[in-house]
Image (cartoon, rainbow, N blue to C red; front, side, top):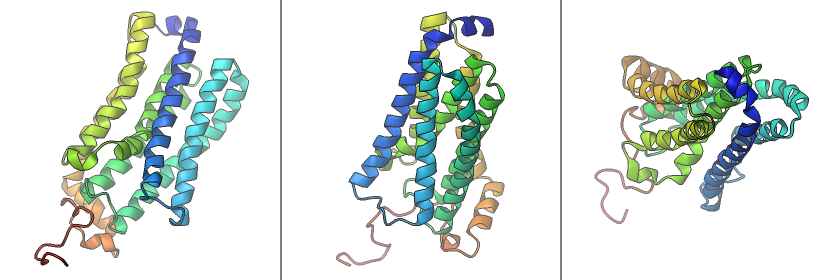
Length: 263
């Protein structure tokens, strides 16, 4: 089956380039909306800016890499690939760090329980890293490489979808709403394969299966004694230590219980 995909992979170029632009557009729209609505600012802490630059840099690199393959510039694509490998490591490290900082400061989104948010972000960024690492390992098998890379990139669209969806209305299933949107990307790849080849490449099953397994694992780990122990270890000595890990934070602007109206 791999031979069939290798022989006809030139017909895949348009799909992967267009999908790369779609994912980049989702990310720009999601985070751009935050800025337009005044929910983010250039006065944010430096580490947040570094995280944003690394995240957007990876997005740009992903689009460029797909363009290079589409144009036949495989040699340049491979050289940039080693830069991309290091960049992906930076994405994972900063994703883990920034999530921990938000939880420690007690600044998690109100539509996620803090403990759930911690596990969700950590597992999804590790899932991105795992899919990307396997894709790089299989870089000699183009059919597997580009499909697994797309699935890894799809995971990174999750935070953008979270900014585009009406998340408060999805409580307590907000994370599932985001996951369903993310799953549309590998599903689009499956449909494209069926139209071109009459079958679905196994890489899609591994990629989509990883995304689904991550969502299931998040719920199991976040509500387990292990997940609660991790939350307490991360928030020890910080403001997040006083926040209940499995309780939804109050809506922005909500009055504390017992506060008289008008105060």
